[in-house]
Amino acid sequence: MAVYFLNMKTFGRAGGSSAASAAAYRAGERIRDERTGRTYDHSERQDVLHKEIVLPSRFAGEDMTWARDRASLWNAAEGAETRKNARVAREYLVALPVELSPPQRLELVRGFSQELSDRYGFAVDLAVHAPRDFPGSDPRNFHAHLLATTREVRMEGLGAKTTLDMSDRNRRELGLPPVINELLHVRERWAAVTNEALQQAHQEARVDHRSLEAQGVDREPRPQIPRAAFEMERLGIRSVVADRLRQEYESRVQARLERGAGREMHVPSEPAAAKPTAAGPATTAPVAKPQSLEDIRREARENWLRLRQSQIQGQGHAESAPVVTKDRVKNDDLTR
Image 1 (cartoon, helix red, strand yellow):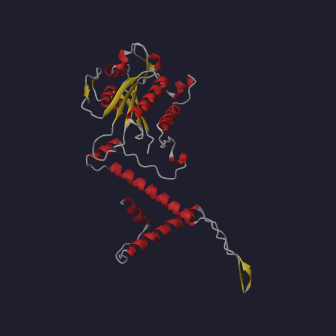
Image 2 (cartoon, helix red, strand yellow):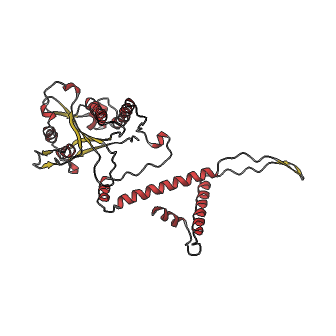
Image 3 (tube, one colour):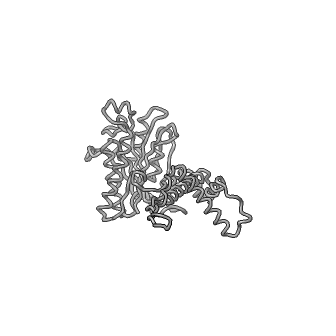
């Protein structure tokens, strides 16, 4: 099924990033950074399905050779910045629906790139990648990198910083809302155009940019493993960070299950029907006193502990099994 994924990040000199390096890696090309003299060669990549530079529609038909050349564009982006902590590029990483054909996926992400370029006036270096061919990778992981300049494109070169890279104070002076609104808008737009493409392709799958809570989905969000930790595990190296994130996820899932079990055990039922007795008139069963949330949690926990104890005894280890305490149960859950 289609999966919603849109991740935004920036590249800055403070973190040692280079726009030329980022562009070369995503496009699978060899680019020399004229500012530092370093050359970045990723021409051996075989998973780049498509690459192109998208400019604002107002330049259609104009001679924009300097901007359509990848090395020229990103060296211009580096040369336009003078601060040692300058932000040199911005990226949108999106997952492409596997339900769409390759031409449909390209049309989708190309149209989205054009929309962003027209809205903010920047250049978008689009690269569509196929799933990586290594153990543990998802063969459905078609995705695209939209690497954007932080400055507006002009006929003669890069101009002022885009409104996305302005402080909220400067945006207020221009009558613009806080920049967080732009980030939320982009997330919503990617969901909208993706669903439009799926509908046009007569696919039933749909994506949703909202949180699980906003969608009314009662489950824990799956853990997001950082790229560094993921690469370590791919190489067979144990990642403490990845292990911790999975353990925390399992703990949240278990806590949710316990809360659900507590609610099910205390679903209101119909009062017992009155029955006549020989000693007197019919009587009604007493109504149980409502329990507090803390009482429900405590009782659910105790019932769950008793269930665990009975499972241990059922396995024939009742005499040798240690006493199951709250701390012990918690540790056992984390190591499963």
